[in-house]
Image 1 (cartoon, rainbow, N blue to C red):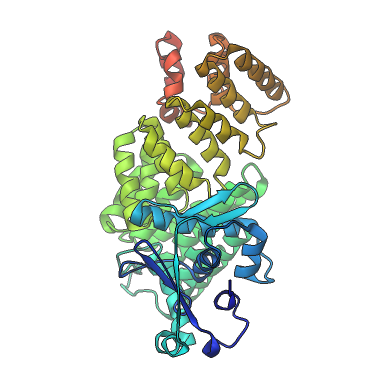
Image 2 (cartoon, helix red, strand yellow):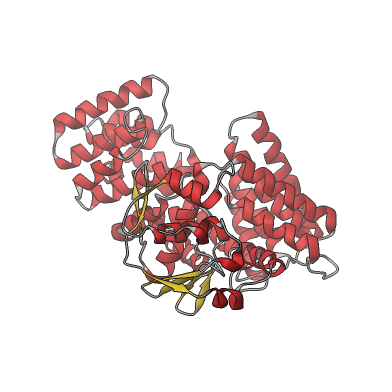
Length: 476
């Protein structure tokens, strides 16, 4: 298949325009925009490049190495960037048509599995529709933040004087939010750098402080348990307070404050209050709905959590972690088919692939799809040595009635736990599946209090629910 539109080895004016159509979708190599019907979907250029290369090779698997070379050429890039691109494509497909189109060959590559038609358009059409370079740069900034993060609105955080971000500050703000979506430490450092440029350019506007607070809190999560994480957490706390102090009427500022209170401080009540205020100030702020949904989920309010998460998905289906939160909500609500659908989307996210596999296995087990559940665990790279995977297998085999295999897996769980691995919930489930209830409650007691309300809804705990110790465990 020709690859000139992807690799750009010739001058743009000599390139034919390639248009692909599949279902109600179309994408052209000149304007790099994926359309659903007549609606342009917000995707960054490298995400569209990933799609174009898959379409050029539709019907057959391409390796991760091929994709990395085609999309990034010789640029140094982490494999997680490719996983994120696939995740973004699947989220847009799931949101608009309920399909995924892209198959994964675990550890190897991907395949575009739907029939696609390829049309070569004349260079004159390319010239007519191609944007000049300056417009392309503006488009990137617009797509990265204007459509991705603040979809269906014209969000510009106001300073106390009522001035919106303009010029370099506006562009830096867009790039800050773009890098915030990344999965690596370098992405988050770049996000912080961009938000600091916003502060430098417009120090009285809360937007830069709010963005830096959120990125710092996320970086603290990456460094969890280290002295650097503590430094970033302190910075996030300070910056989020400063954002609100600059403008108490800024939805972005209150969203940042609520995120830090939820993610760093674990203060759900304060986080909920700030996030509600953010939504009141700006009803179309997708991240505020997403974070408020997460807070409600951890408080055990599954119905209202789903309402907020679905609202966030309507505003911006590509938000990080959103599909995982929806999968978790549906699983805890015992809507297993929906949980399975969302968990499959999450499998493309390099940060959440193993939690997604565990959640998928649990949902398959609850629907008695035992072979699928075992296959989910076997796909995990760390399955052979991971306590969570072996504990889940113990529970699956017990549900199947294979007591010998359930006991065999429990022995592995005991060995891994003795070696220092910790996964209290799944370890408890492995014990309860083998009728060792006292040990199950002993392991449950090691769960942090902050997690107990949500995970008390796990259907696998039904066998323990009638025990008088269950209520005491829930409430500490």
